[in-house]
Amino acid sequence: MNSKGLHIRLKVVFLLAIVVAIGMPAVSYSVELGVNLYGLSYHLDRRDVTGYRFNERNPGIGATFTIHEKLRSRYYFEAGIMEDSYRRAAKYVTFGYGYRIYKGLSIGALCGIYDSRSVAESAVVVAAPKLAYRYRDVELHLVHLPEFPGINPYPSFALYATLYVWGQSLD
Figure (cartoon, rainbow, N blue to C red):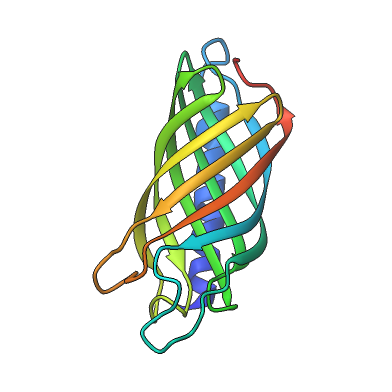
């Protein structure tokens, strides 16, 4: 998939998210928009097979759009661009689910499209488990990027923050 095709898909996903959010009844959910600030990763294998030491500072920016939240469940879209572990640009768009297990602590998963020439020649579909902790308008996320044969041979963890700038959570 070329870069132009991925940009078009990202725009379509966010447009669909907005349409879904507007079409849902307002009494049972909240809509929120957050800014994602990317920054850190940790690789279980410190180097790749060629001896390259992974970059574990991954600056970038993105957005989170909550489309439905009710009781302990939350559904959302995320997209962003960041510097990957090989110091190249990486882009992604995902659909996520989170389940609040205690106060601000939640577990969940992300599934979507990840595009980085460090990983594959074209965009790939990925899934990843996630742990998050939210306090007021700030949420910290820890995502495990497991080993995927043929896609990601190096399992890692990523840490990033979301600052919610619009809307209100049901919490």
